[in-house]
Amino acid sequence: MESKISFAATPRKKIRSIQMTALIDVTFLLLIFFMLSTTFADLESMELSLPGEAKAAVSSANTMQIYITDVGKFYLAGQVFDEDQLFDELQRRFATRADTKVMLYSAPQISVQTLVSAMDVIYLAGGQSLALASATSPAAPNL
Image (cartoon, rainbow, N blue to C red):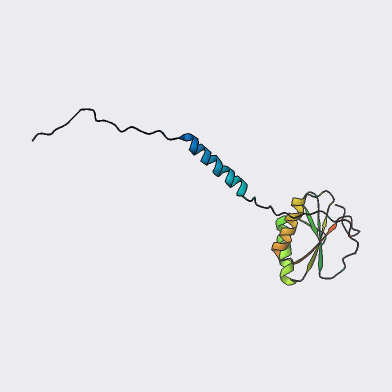
């Protein structure tokens, strides 16, 4: 059995060059189209500023007064709490009386993040009614 192997050079097909100018033009046109037709996401934000001094004293029996210092400590009924302890105490109080209102007093130099964290703790513990005031209220402890 003989096999025929030919080592002769076979003629190659001529490779046509691709016109890069047209591809680049189309690419830039697509880029410009998508840049102009894209709508950018609107960032939603909440403007939050600390309130001034409270004008009316809170004297309701079902109102808790929480004072927050600029170092992140919370005062509730004369006791000092950190964030986790406050959450547990608020859960206990809201379990016995769910309609309790919360008056949150803040120190003048408190960061907005600390204030928002305090509001989150109150909400997650079950609070449904929250009011903000400055810690310069007459009932505020010396913070």
